[in-house]
Image 1 (cartoon, rainbow, N blue to C red):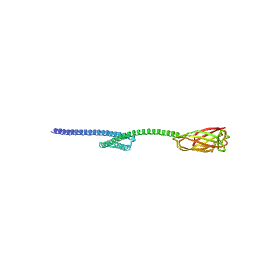
Image 2: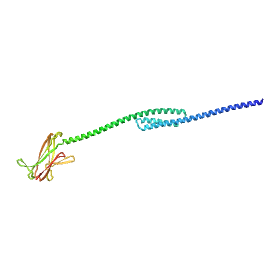
Image 3: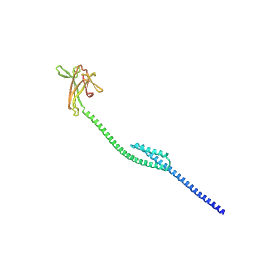
Image 4: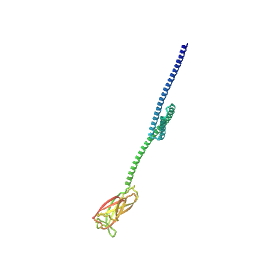
Length: 294
């Protein structure tokens, strides 16, 4: 009887131990399973964190490239890029829990959407700038063509002005000089002897010119004898850098028609030899001739 009771007690102890063992095994299995789940969760969370960091870095690179183009939106792009940089810094130092990661994912999505909107604006702005550049290039071509055309016109006008100036210049022809002996009665006797000469008569013709400016016209006449002396008044006048010593002046009322001019130059002790007569319009020599006295 005692033996039976002992066996029963032993069985009971074994049963309890078996139950405890099974319970321990179940608890150990649950702990192992929870550890694996936690490890998997941590690995997954870290992987997702790295993924978000990469996405944020790509987002920053996109902003950097857009900012480098130096558009009118650069300030706004820089502000958004700084937000991305701040989020990257926060994410790197954040706890790797699901709740925090979810928050950063949400912020990334918002920044990504903002980036897409800004990139669309940049694209539109770039297109508008291209159109504007094309228009400016076309305008520049038109302006260059106009400038060249104006230069041609200016050149033509200058040539025309020079042609008109040349065409309006008066022409002096038939410059002649005769020497005379003047008697006490006033009678003039032409001579070619220096010893008998006491007056020179100089004449020339101003040709007709319809486009010349009408009005009083003054000419400076210079007579140089065989000894290289200027006869007459010997007055010196300057025209810019040019100076002229002349014998006398003659003023003519010119009305675009042919005019004959004749002036007398009295003198004495005329030298033998060749004389030179020059007619100047201000400082410009317009006619010349020579004669001789024997």
